[in-house]
Structure formats: C-alpha cells, structure tokens
Length: 236
Ligand code: DC
Image 1 (cartoon, protein in one colour):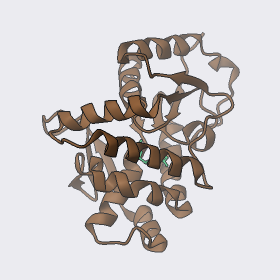
Image 2: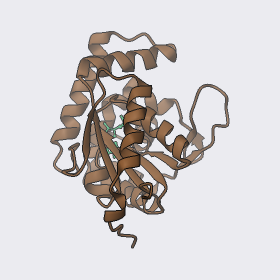
Image 3: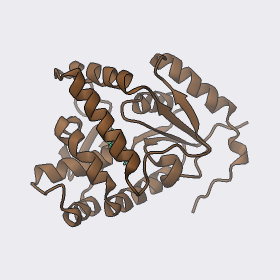
Image 4: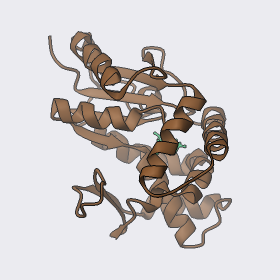
C-alpha cells in the first residue's frame, strides 16, 4: 500500500482546510499549498494599485503578470510562511476584510482562474503535496489520489474565524463575520467557472463538532486507507 502523493482538500470558507492541510503536510513531509493565497494576492495588488475590482481586463492582466511567491517565514510573528507579490511582503495584508470582501468577484473571472490554475497545476503535479482550495479535486487536479471536501455549519465557521481575527488583534462583530462567510460561500458556489463543489469521488468531512486533532486523525486514517494505487496519475 502506498501513501497518496497528491491530496486535494476543498471546502467552504473557514472550514479548517488550511489548518488541517498544513498539519497533514507536516506529518507526511509533503509540500503544503494553500491556493486561496493566490486569489487573495491578486486582489490585494488590485486594491493597492487602485485597479477597480469591476475592471475584468485589468484584473486579468494583473493575475497574468504578478509574481506571487511563498517562502519560509522571515519574521517571527506567528506566520506559517511569507507571501510576496512582486517582492513585497503581503502575508497579513491578504487576510484583511477589504480583501475578504473583494476576493470572490476577482476569483470568478475566467482569465484570472486560467492564469492561476495553470501555475497551481504545474506545482501540484510534482506530487507529494497537500493542495487546498475550492476546485482542486474538480478542476485543478482531478487526478488527485485522495480528495477531501471539508465543511462545517456557517455559525461554527464564523466562530473559528472570530478566534483567528481576535488572535491578530481585531475585534469584529460576530454577525458581520457570519454574514461575510455566507456571502462568500454563495458567491463561490454560484460562479459559472470552477465553482465550489464537492467532486464525486471526494470524501465529505463535516468538522462542526470535531477538534483540530480529531479532524487530523480522521484525515490521516483516510490517507492510510486510500486506494491510491488504483488511480493512474496523469503526469503530463
Ligand atoms: O481559502 P480562502 O478563503 O483563502 O480563499 C479566498 C477566495 O479565493 C475564496 O473566496 C474563493 C477563491 N478561491 C478559489 O476560487 N479557488 C481556489 N482554489 C481557492 C480560493
């Protein structure tokens, strides 16, 4: 029995995908790739440069040209990694409410998705990777050896997001956080291209009543029992 080489974790906002994906990758000695940062980076650059979010052509050009890099953390401020756009450190900026509010329309543009999906595919196909997003199992890497779709109730996801924001010194209203999560999931699920949806062969995991350790344990069980040797990986 072999360990799945490409693991795709998709799911709703704040369902725990990145936390679990990061821990799983650490356990397996794999690369962890959170694809949401790419859509966030493009959105942040657009906002910083004063590009209107409604200007599809300009945003698409930006997505095609901006150089997004993920490196080992170069500052000890709680970050898992340092994210740069054209060399500038934007690790925390991409988590701002302004980016949260604008990232769904940006990620719905076909040209933006084409540019970022191509990069994600190139990286993912190298294998030994845990890739997290909305369309990894359906569009980016349908050949993934193991696909997991994570979800939790909107209320639980809002509670988790509140904790995260508070840890960074923010003090938002619970109702606002909940409304933003529901709005973003609706937008991401209803867009025509690569919408948030569970792949037919993905395993649905409801994390509402589970701790991080419990979710990780279940995912590790799935990794151990995966029928990955039956999947032919398309490597070209
Ligand atoms: O996972 P996240 O909240 O950081 O993702 C930010 C946004 O990016 C999300 O609202 C939808 C979009 N996204 C996407 O469309 N496809 C992906 N593979 C990852 C994220």
